[in-house]
Image (cartoon, rainbow, N blue to C red; front, side):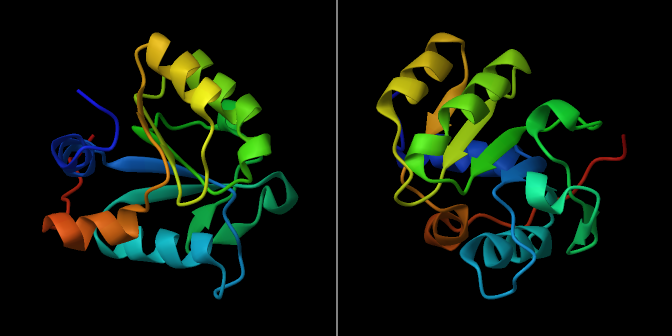
Length: 146
């Protein structure tokens, strides 16, 4: 299945429940903050990742410094990073076998995407779930009791 096709995006957005948002911001006017709030409003649990804000709270969730520090398994890593800062995060996601890596609009790393795909991880690049959810008509998610 080719990367970023509508069927793949739909499957991801309908099955993912917990998202690590790498590059989270505590500033409400930042796109990562807006997307985090939107995803939470749609029923996803979003765990913010930002070494500068580690230990603080953003939108009711404790911020972790990196993916390796997470204490909860996640279904997807959503990357709000400059493309040249994505390699270590992609490698951490591979190491942790996070099923999906989603790189936001403008975040393109073909070599990193290939590494992740070779490791069996689904990759989305240059897309935003906040745009794709309404475009695809995705219903709000319900969290399972685990």
